[in-house]
Image (cartoon, rainbow, N blue to C red; front, side, top):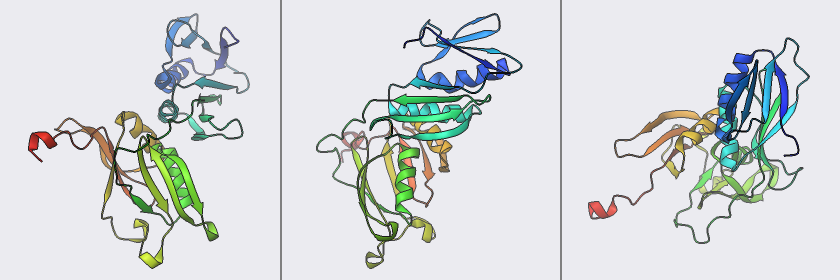
Length: 265
């Protein structure tokens, strides 16, 4: 950082302190000190962002905070919206900056544009994944579904085969070392989106290391809650939602196989 610290003015000191404390917590940034009506926030014991109350705040500023991972960016975005911020750009790649510029933008109550950005490339999937099963899902608007799945659930687009009239003939998305395939309806195979059906016949269960953080991002993106976040009696924690076209997803920290040896299976 080329600056020692940065100062901005706000209309409501107490409200801004509550907002920044909640929004920046996922980035490891917290309140360091308060001095004569000013709050200093930072990592560790060095305050780098200061704000104080003025009746006429300065014109809105753009302030970008570093994130250590893309998951931190998604968690920041959810926390900032939950704290009362306004969406100014959901988590995603901004290729016009560079291919690995992954960021999210939120407007503070005073209109300042705050950003969390991670410049680290997404880890490549492990060669030879731990599963030999790759679900293939059908969506009426497959292109929009791919964008939403990446933004809401944290998938990464790896490969897309476009077709005529905006169709997606085939695509591959990864999360961790798992893969799903997304495509448009195929009448010859009677493959349709659950959006056109009355209910679903399957659910996808996906391992995530931090179900609480994942839940916040998914709910902020508009996932429809089926089963709220909870800790099961067998110790796993997770939640169940529907995506915009009705596919059923369970995200949690359970991995199959933990009880196989015990049960003799």
